[in-house]
Image (cartoon, rainbow, N blue to C red; front, side, top):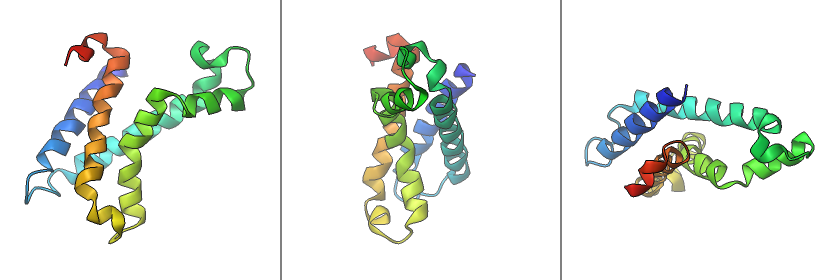
Length: 124
């Protein structure tokens, strides 16, 4: 599972880079949609499973463990990577469309996720 997430992160970042080129904004949009859906499912699975994670459990009730997860660094990185997509879909022709180029930069935060699983990525 983790290897497929690594590959999807790299594909997603590559698509994000391609989409920054003028005239290529909608290129590979379906890959972007697919990756956001997978990252959202991954986030929800982690959120649901937090009470069993020793990093967040520490004899806390489930809701408290989930709160600590939501405010954790990697959870915030995940949200910043997927939230702009949903905001652009929810509010078409709004402020989010005007600043889409800047919001797309948050996708690069997905690379930070790799640091959690592949420590050598910090060398980049």
